[in-house]
Length: 69
Figure 1 (cartoon, rainbow, N blue to C red):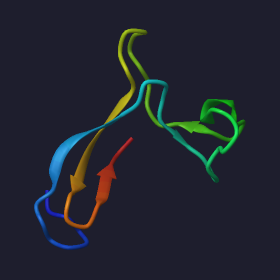
Figure 2 (cartoon, rainbow, N blue to C red):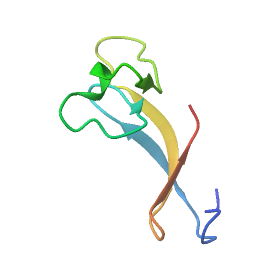
Figure 3 (spheres, rainbow, N blue to C red):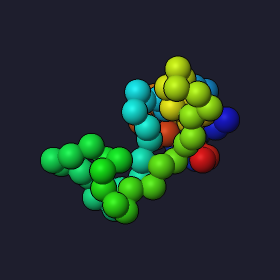
Figure 4 (cartoon, rainbow, N blue to C red):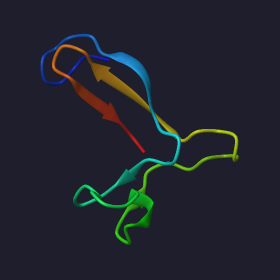
């Protein structure tokens, strides 16, 4: 995949976390994101032994990440 911003070749990989990946309207500064009522989980985990992840591509040149969820 080619970066839409700078045209460099992007690297394939994953965004991964040990407790979930969430979208928030604002950063949760004083609590875990899963405690925020408006937090939207962006991925599901198939089992308890697997860490949540989202396949993604990143551009090391301009530091952009592209993913679908």
